[in-house]
Length: 85
Image 1: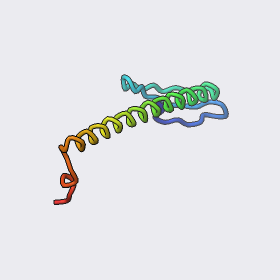
Image 2: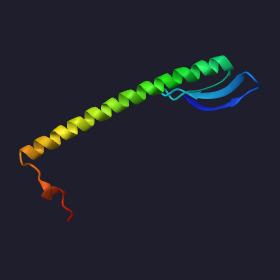
Image 3: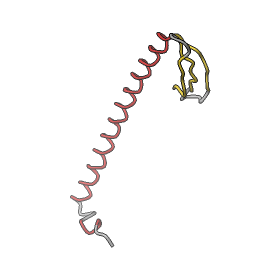
Image 4: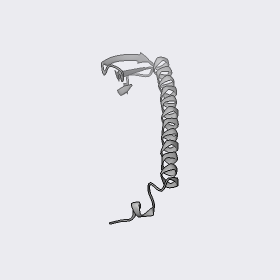
């Protein structure tokens, strides 16, 4: 994951990268085409993570809704449980 980067001339980037798995850092200078490929791959990975997170969130909300409905149907909770005290 990029921590910081700066342009070095017309066609190079100086970057500090951090590994999310082991938290190690690596400093490097990359050609512009390599940096663009890295940026593209990083964007793809972030979109994949976001999609999986959104699915997990929807699944969690569906489970919570089902539990809430079941509790209402079994008279385990009612409106009084949500009244301010």
